[in-house]
Image (spheres, helix red, strand yellow):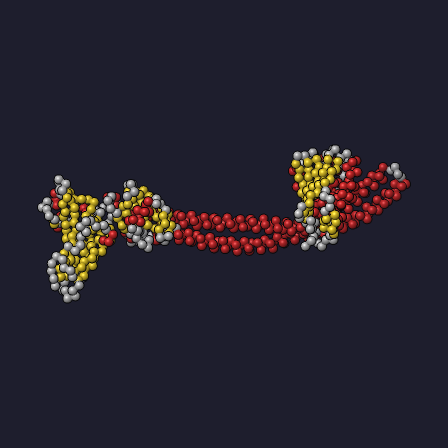
Length: 567
């Protein structure tokens, strides 16, 4: 029973610990899911905010700054700007002018802004507007295009009689240079290097009108220098295309380095999620009129936070699991302690009661024997004698149960003996009983098998198996008792036909006072303690016993280790 109590304790520990860990795990999973849902919601909201701001600002392009070095050049060396000059209200040119002659009091240099146009017959003509930089001036702003300030380059066609090309104009540098020490159209001592050009567009100039070019802006431009925290907290950028996939705008967002046109084209070819500078970006697409806004955002920081949360949660969960295990282990000890004490008291009561009942029953039996010598034909005395003997057998089995159970877990008085010989002796005794019951007993044992254990208990085990078989086997049944030796254990099985057996009661067979043949319980001799004793004997020898019922046959199988008790 101590083994059963230990098993009960570990069952309580495992069940309670598993339940507690399951609850903690579910809580952690829910917490992790809520955090991820919150992050995803924040990212989606930020992407929608970027899209809305980009769409709002795309309806009114205010300005655009271009790096001169990124502009392509035509065959004359002029820098080509793929924009409609008629949408430009003014432009700001930034550059650096220098002179190699320190004594020069003043110096200047300049170039022109060239607009391409076509006459009525389709002949291309060019108009230009000059700009100039003086010393100590790094930025100039020109109103553009003003027809009264345009000059004619090699033709006399008025500007008003031409059709201006709406997809391009050019900017040149170093048309002329001069200083206080030398004058001329190409003064070598004066140098002008253009850096950027900012196009300031007319009011309500839409982004969608730039089918032949591309706008480059920053978050400051679309958020009016007030970037929301939800946007600034994660890396993001966006690209705007028309419905055919042509790039209209590149916005590098808050990336460390601006995105080039080549990179933007490559990103669009990848159709969505991309890797940029070893960072993975997800993409969300939004449609706005005839434009597609592709917002790219990185969840690396969020994933890092979620990873940290997962690690901390795992550490907390492990610590909580250890604490729970200790608490459950201590609590389970307190729980089974009461069970153990109650069981010990029960065993002690059974032992004491059995001892106390043994004496009066013995006296009654002896007195009945004396009276039967005087009155041999007295029916009442024979009934008393029979019931007394039955009570003596019950007390014997109850005491046996108590003694075997008390011996489990204690040092055993085991010896080595031939298991096959012990089984043969039991079979020899039962052959007469099987013959009287008109049943057949067939045994199958090895020639010899040395076993280490309690020979008397093992003999009792065989007695219980065969006694159970001769009582409950069907009429004229063939009972098979078989022993198979393995490498480390021996398997003993007893099979007998039993047609009145309920398969659902298999798990109850080893309970005390349980009898499966309830319909004939008064006719079949026994108290339902035999299989309980057999189970205790198997446990005493570190073995197991089990019952099964298939195809009308009941089988009891016992597995005993061959080195029982050798430690």
